[in-house]
Image (cartoon, rainbow, N blue to C red; front, side):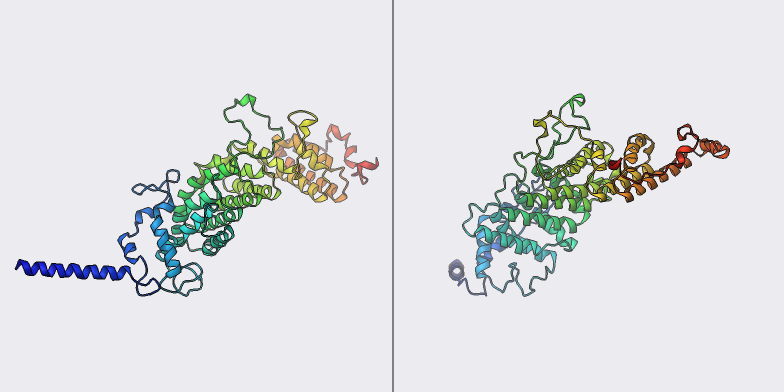
Length: 466
């Protein structure tokens, strides 16, 4: 009985060896059996690696705590994916996804995750370390980054797909475009910023809440706006006065040098502010960094980034005014630098002193553009007519109104006169009780010279011809 069992067992072992040898010698071009199929079956994917990235970018609890590339694509798996791209079983489209959908998109989240596992880590690792990559030239890496990621994930991506993609791509994209140690090309960083902005604009609120605390510190570091005034740890008495002219952003270590990339990062900040608009609980723990980002954009030495910074300041103030109670002075100083920016460096301190006080409103009174002066006086009228503390600023604003009565442009003088009348009507409503007796009795104030000053016509000539 035992001899029969041993014979059967020996025969089974011989058949098993023969089948294993035949599988090892399988033709790689044969579509019936893909290469490394058995190896992938032995290493199933681990869903716990797709959890959210927390604690400063490390993997969630229970994972291997490696970076995203190593967690999902080991060296052997990268070789398998490269072999499948050349010796795959079925037809593939431009993104490496099997089928003939022509790039219309993913049919499900699982299909997108499978595509991310097989294709995206190769592109991101090669793009981040392009100097030591021999498989493709930098131009080819840029093309792959645009074709594989930017063409797939756009601003109108489905939320479920954007959530899954953001879990997988957040850390690699941040390391690619926002890390100071990145060695990627400018075009690669531009594409990575665009993909990250598209994912943030289309992801769900739950993923947005966990993404903001991780993303904002990298943005602050890359724009070098952590301590713009250089007053961290300085006593309040030694800090610069609000009237002191703020300086432009300095070229420090870690700051993005390429202006186009900084402009795309500014667009990313605008996208982030647009998503958190109306959600104060999302920004309550990162309000200091968000204000620093907006101030850094307004203090940038590139004109387009300054414009984006002004738009970001407007969005932030409109949506989260209650959170900005203690940041008004700092944001006003940064915004005032945009009024005197001439896209050039003028070393005024070389001629006078280390600090320069500038009266920005006076400069706007004599601006060479009529439209600028008219909008300036309209802004002053808005302050006096709509602000709650208009009584406190009225003594400081009225001298500029009086200057507008002698403007070179006749339409500007008429506009200022009409605004002063509106301010006077508001004053009459607020002090109706005090003015009622003077109106009924027809009394004229002393400064009118018994009513004679009220008949003086508005000057029709300019102050230059006097």
